[in-house]
Image 1 (cartoon, rainbow, N blue to C red):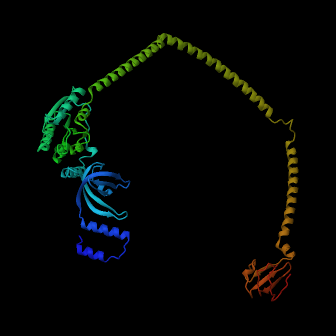
Image 2 (cartoon, helix red, strand yellow):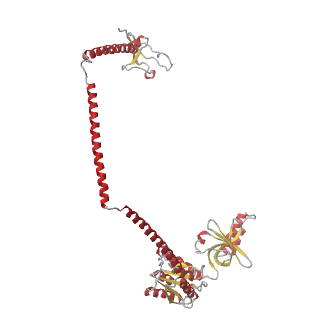
Image 3 (tube, rainbow, N blue to C red):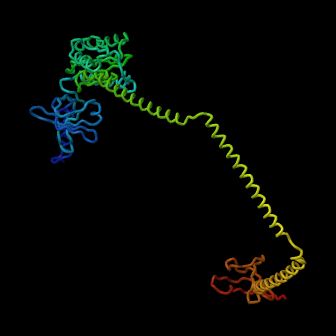
Length: 468
């Protein structure tokens, strides 16, 4: 915390004119240095939950109000939701929001006014047991569908007991009820409630337990926020239904129980099914079963009547099959004769065709002479045709012969290794080359070369030799 002398020294060093930004920053630093974290009480108004998770509201009393901001990471630790009209006690840092110059409180934690330490203890215990997994849904026991005995852990003088008994008598008067009396309020009540649950569990005489109590303040219901009681409920070998207070009241016992009911009456309704509804459903199912049985009997009777009409004496069946067998024998004899006649006629037809296709010396005299003449004529025609093709190919080949190309004025140039030169760029000055003509050849030396499009490169002839 800054003392007055240091603050005055820092302010005296400021220039005569300062910016708004600097003014707000200095004011914020001064406020945060002077005011430590403190508790402030007031009523919530103008509450806003931002999309970011931050909470903004005003805290007011009869004469003034102050803006408050509670950031998301702090709001998530509350365990309950803020609402307009609530009376809170907040632990806050006094500060200034520089961007707008707004005086505000930054909330570190909050509790409902008048509850104080009790509510904080409730939240801490709830967080502890939840972290241990005592509230996990997967470990909760299933309730019996048709319980025969229901145990009730409550005070014999409680109005909740009368409500539960009235509900059970109306819904399921066939179910036996066992009451395990215990105080549900005051000093030592939590331990006595836990002892009653352990006694009911050890006696093993009921199918489900109801732990119930009427409504009241947080102090009135505090016995059901005991850690030992919560662990006793969880350790019970039979399902436990909690029906404590009104619908808006929540205790640790509600979270740890296998089923939470909003009221004691609702707990009785959950524990025992409505006998009238069960009887109505049973009657409906009985009627449906009878109807189905009559339908099945009618269908089976019709099937028996149909089978009886189809049932005949064995001698009748034998006579019918004997007659059918004789008919098949006649058809088989007729079919055999038809097959034989058809095969005979087909065989005769094939014999005629064979006789007609057999060669006759009278109709084809000297077949070899006729074939010899045809072969000679075909050979002469083929020889004449191939001779003409050979002549045409010879003429075409003579035009493409290298000697004929040279005779038309062309020449062939080779380098000193005898390789034909096709590109002037492959030659070098003073390189020896040979030039072949249609008649003879010449030895030459390259003087210069050029890439111009000329019929040939300019070549200086060093010597010439003619050869036939």
